Length: 303
Ligand code: CP
Ligand code: NVA
Image (cartoon, protein in one colour):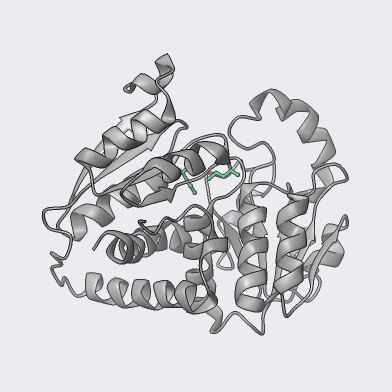
């Protein structure tokens, strides 16, 4: 059975922090121009049913940076769009490539591909999880603030895929997480229950963004309407208007608090241009770290 990366929940704290340590090491080596060849002769398939800039390019750059090769398939390019069963696609792809990196809508698509694959399947975002992104974001927090366990992390906005992966990380690694989401936009209740059960620190769900950011070492924001929810955009603009991370809300947090945004950002909606461009915002470090984390994941699963 290959080891998959469907969500953070299938990893231990030691494994997750080990991937981050390795990514930090690979980043240092990358800065001094060290050549890596450990995935020479290996190929991954990227199967993307939603758009992507960062995740696609950082996975491709990571694979080439380790000496491997990439085949990119959008939903237009495969027989999936013409209803070829996932279980057939998975077994066929497994004969050609050494790993599949999948961005899609339902988590069940990743789970079914993994169930039939004889090579690792990596979740590059579903409606339910964005595990590789949150690992890159925790790496960024550790670089800026040191170990994450004593820190207070805030989430302000939609209880979406990113929020769910942060909840899983808080449960496994053990750090305080406070999520402020509007009524009716809570994260996944099952994920919350499992994570609270294993967490050594509180994972709290509230509706007040000011209470969430007060005392926070890190504030996370993300778009109000994720991919696939575009038809709810207008309604969400109204519901989320008091959840914008602007100068006034940021002023309620400690002055050295780090702002995270996985990007792409909608300036003037979930975050103002001023906050996104401020020295407190680490969004572009997060984006860079995706490449180093993806190298560590690929090396560990496919190497
Ligand atoms: N953060 C992130 O996943 O960005 P992309 O949608 O551009 O891949
Ligand atoms: N929550 C966002 C993340 C984008 C990287 C979405 O799913 O669209």
